[in-house]
Amino acid sequence: MDGVIMHHVALWTAAFLTLGIISFLYRDNAWYKFCEAVFIGISAGYWFVSYFWDNLYGKLWLGIFPTDPTQPPDYILLIGGALGVMMLLRLIPKIGWLSRWPLAFIVGATAGLNLIIYFASNVMVQVEDTIRPLFGANYAASAYDIVGNIVVAVGTFTALIYFFFSKEHKGAFGGAAKVGIFVLMVTFGASFGYTVMSRISLLLGRIDFLMGDWLGVIK
Amino acid sequence: MSGRIYRYLAVVVAVIACVLLYAGKRVGWYEDLMFPTWLSILVCILIAASMLWILYRTIKGKPAERRIVFLYVGIAVSLPLLMTISLHVPISSEGQLLYDGMKKLQPGSKVLVSFDYDPPSAPELQPMAVAFIRYCFEHDIKVIIMGLWPQGPQQANLALAKILAEPEIKAKNLVYGVDYVNLGFQSGNEFVIQRMGSDFKSMFPTDYRGTPYDSLPLVRNITNYSGIDYSFNLSAGYPGTREWVLIAVDRFGLILGAGNTAVQTTGMYPYVRSGQLKGILGGMSGAAEIEELTGRLGKGAQFMVAQSFGHMVMVVFIVIGNVAYFLHERKKKRT
Image (tube, each protein chain N blue to C red):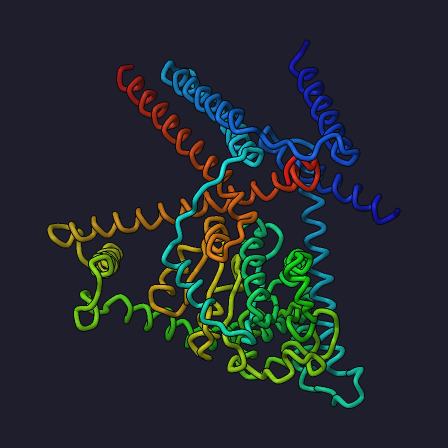
């Protein structure tokens, strides 16, 4: 019985908060502000608890003091723990400079990993793909693919020209830069279209909840 | 009566209507409120006529205020959910490529599904998750679930609960740990993907329920990506498809298909063209595509009708907005 009551309470609470957020479309109001504050507070709490149990307890504590007697303690985790504590030292101004060390570690590790993978995957593979034979290997590409290859090659080339500022955009060079702008506009348009689609989907999700789960007027 | 009293009255009426609908559904006054075809057509005609009226008023110099636009978008998205209208979704080459990859999987193949999203992105990605996992279960493909977003594995559980309740899947008597497993969330973003390349167990010493990795028959012999036949990533941002492509695909040779929110799909298309990604499903239309391809229409297809109506209304309002703009410019030039 308690579970049933809680189900109804949960549905009405979710509906109350959803409508509160949507009410902003009418104008800013106290209901919206309340819902916004609840959302921010719960999100922050959720992330804190999630990371506490997953990282501090799940990895650090259980790694150093394993519950399984056959598993040896992993003392190397203490280095990570110490770096984590050092990060918090910025709260003490006198020794706040120590927080730069863990930051340097994070920046160094991330840069080291990303430098290679981004260069290999995003630069080399994409460049190779852009300058593939326009008519396909052994001239086997279909007309659709040939047109696509030409559009990609010309689009990339002209867009790069647009971002080349060492030469004035005049004459043939300026014309190519204009084509580059056109390509960029098409890209932004496609991107914006997909963004609108995504936002409508968010709205649909909430309307589906209100009309389906809450009011039950749709299946 | 003042405007404020009208507003309060409107809120009271709306609350009473909601309470009546809520109670009515529970008591069994109605099953659902689907419109008959004639009413659906009538509603569409009325909406179109009212938008023409707004266009006419705009031309006459009385543009609609922004709240009218919000109201119309809301109506356009809500009412189609009550209509008995279906929409054929054409299959994109990227969606077909993904499905072709799925069809190559043999019974017993092991598939890694990463749920890298949270509830706000569920309308787009959850139907994809349901369709993909259902397909796997129908074809006796083993499913290993994980998440780089904290709420991802919970979304996976919702999808699993829905699929496992279906009679034909129920009849298969699928066993947790043998036919499917949820390894849960792991923090660390791309470093998790990197580490999984050498040791799955180090990243997931236990599953979502706390069962030790070695006690799970499905994964106990999997040490790295070489034990995975296919991977499907459901992504709403960072960490997501890009990180999986850059590390798991390019460094460790994982075969990857993806389902993305529409907002990030354009950024992923170059990976499909270059062959790094074996197909992609973009947004709600992608969800409808995989439902169509797997032969089981669901929320994705249902939502596409509402989304198409929403898009049409927005296009009309863009036209109306441009009419208002050019009329305003012309008026300014004259004065």
